[in-house]
Length: 189
Image 1 (tube, helix red, strand yellow):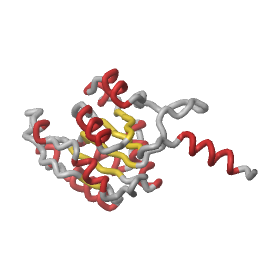
Image 2 (cartoon, rainbow, N blue to C red; image 1 turned 120 degrees about the vertical axis):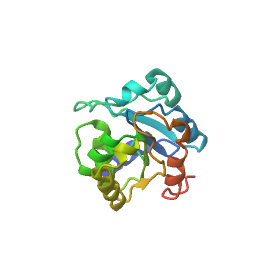
Image 3 (cartoon, one colour; image 1 turned 180 degrees about the vertical axis):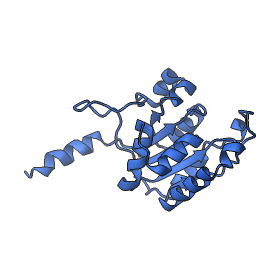
């Protein structure tokens, strides 16, 4: 038996039967609808929230829906991984702050750290921006979107809502993240 065989067997035991989707949540809205759509599309789902994003979700309900703990902080050395490795990542809703930090490589939260690493790991990633038109007018936002496109990040079509309105959630198409990722994913048995 080779030294690698026990590791391979352990990875096979840890791998879920379905593809695993990380949903990265920012401070812009709840993701229950996206999780439901992902489950219907035969994904298993784990949620990673930015620290501010935790304030916008019903954590107990999301954990019951996914059957996994929500991650928001780095684990300590030796602490077990609470989620299987991601086959794909959906960043939804994605705030102005997260998009700009991610594109700049500022890995100051677990959520942005995972996104920064996803590029180097070749994990297909879709982002659904959710921001107002004043934020979208800032040059950094357009530069960040361009950089993310250069990184092969799939970017959703949401049109920014008016400033100070907090509106637009009714126009937010959660399932677009899954549609974008569908073209990048292998067919699962």
